[in-house]
Length: 248
Image 1: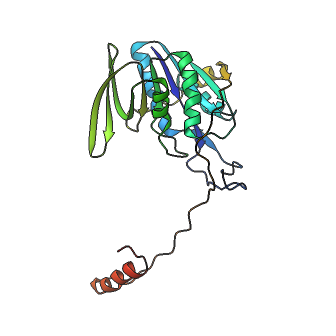
Image 2 (image 1 turned 180 degrees about the horizontal axis):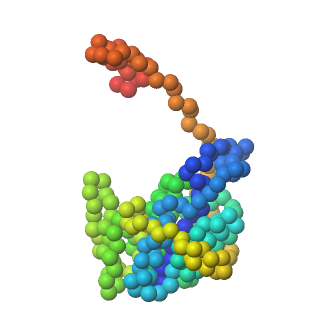
Image 3 (image 1 turned 60 degrees about the vertical axis):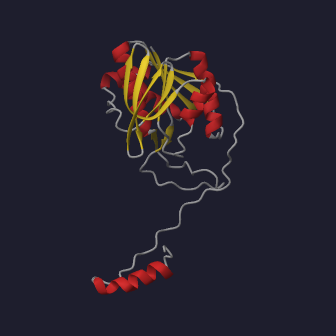
């Protein structure tokens, strides 16, 4: 089985994000980046599938040299090979997915894994786009995977419960938190990752259909107001909610 995981390199969740001077991108000065957390579940799923069925695992990312740090972590976790689609240009989700799909088609994987979303933009579009471009079935927000004789049974989260779907290989899966518990890179894995080569490829340029016109931080939260400590404060609270907060 050939399993490919597509990952992203995102700002650390503890980073204090600042808007850049162009008012369209974040200021990357002093920003630490990390492997997208949802992608860790996809990597672990790929490793478990290989352990059960054998085959090869490949990690793929589209971006600049900074993405090599994240690719190295995936290699240290146990992934066999890494591919960097080297491109520093600004792309929307459509353009990224189109470039990924073109490279994936050349590799003919049995299973393509993503995290359900990337924590930088949270649009949850790329896995579905890639599946559509490749003409493959896709299952999103997956919390359990079973593969038997080419049939894949996925349990996915839906509003108010879970849904179980059945499909066939090859397919695209978007992993949700709860699918597994990602392993930590071992010392042996970290040392091995240093010797593994990251193959660089030049992705095709594609038109972006979404443009960021402006980016700004939300207004600071206003200070709270205590109108009383007992039931006598209710009329004043209702008045403030109606006249100042205008919530009803």
